[in-house]
Length: 368
Image (cartoon, rainbow, N blue to C red; front, side, top):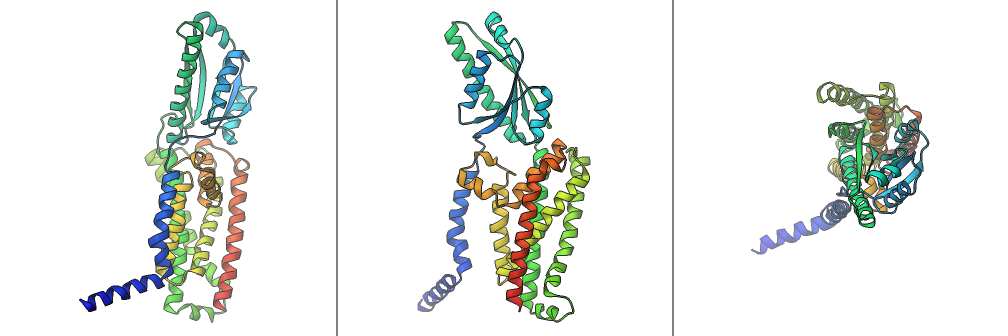
């Protein structure tokens, strides 16, 4: 029994000396609990919307103020024509639009019945369904208030139009998100393991005596994963479009250009991990827990970012997949051009340059 407890003490001290194991055992459960507790929600907060009010009446203004005055929705702009609605959706100014026809208040008072049109961006089916449910609840509440005031049964009918994804197919949202997660796995995880493997086996020193510069060696190891990622993008697009039925409205050139920028950012992350991690096991843990979990929870793949606390929304800004998935949805589903996703592309390019610089600098310090 004494020997048994001696082995327990030995294993305990072994764990306590291993900082990375302690982080996984103690810190990661707390991080996951906080992320899942706050990020895993389908509640909507401050969802942007635009208004086209052809009636410009007191009643339409009351309904707009009722929407803008709650925590779910936030008015961003008044529009002047129906053509402006499509532009607002493509530029990302809104998640839904409300159209009040001329004579809205007149119909309301004369017949106790009126109608409005609700146009919802359904490229994210879960988000679109939640928005529709909230709008219906607010519409019913608005009817009750006016019925009580006028002592008559008031009916305001909302005609709902689902834009970009009228059938509310979840694949429209899933395919762009899958592309982001797969490329993060292939590029960041596999690149980091590949380079650390050379260090563990002692073959990195053999490579360093070759005529190539160390930086060129590191970049050369990343090229095959870059090519594989591009092949995966093509395969996902082909299967997604012809088998699953996901539309590819935007330019294929824009899609691949965006994928190239994101792939380079993911490769840079893998190189950075490999410059820090001493072993393959630690590199895998850092890539899976430090990249894959935040990518799944904080990139907008599964849960809307707008519903998260301000701190998590800020953290999501430093996750490359968040910008790639947003831009890919806009290009594939909405058919926007490169200028419409200029912000997302610029952020990804900046991340790539910054991560590449830090990675190469760390490799030089470690290898010389």
